[in-house]
Amino acid sequence: MERARSGSPKSKLRFSSKAQRYLTSHTWPGNLQELEKVIWQAVQLSPSSLIRPSHLAGISPEAPAVLPLDSAGSILAEVEKQAIEEVLRINRFNISKTAREVGITRATLYNKLKRYDILPE
Image 1 (tube, one colour):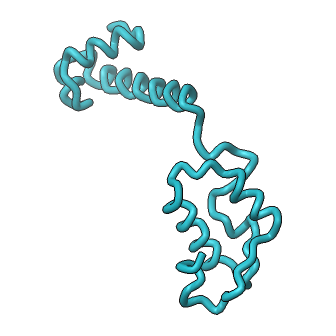
Image 2 (image 1 turned 60 degrees about the vertical axis):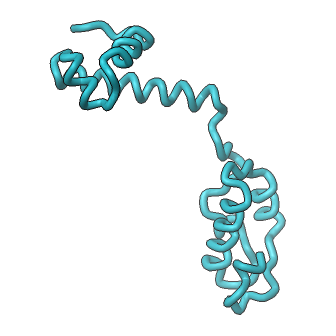
């Protein structure tokens, strides 16, 4: 907090009780650097020395800061599947061209086609 306060006339930095709950309930995937960034931004946004939840950019106790690993993995897999299907469609199921454009080998593309159950049209 000292770094965020330095150079600021807000020398008696305080957090509202709700802002404290927001900060303590957040999982902080970026650890200390993320916390420092959020506090620094809050100091800049606050017109006074009192930090409120509205000054805490992107922090909310209602929403998880990070998706659970199984959710994140399934979302990434779905995005990858859709991207492969789209490039395959554009390339009229030309495997070599699709693999080059996606940036993977043909063997890897075949493995992903099998994994995602993508069949030629």
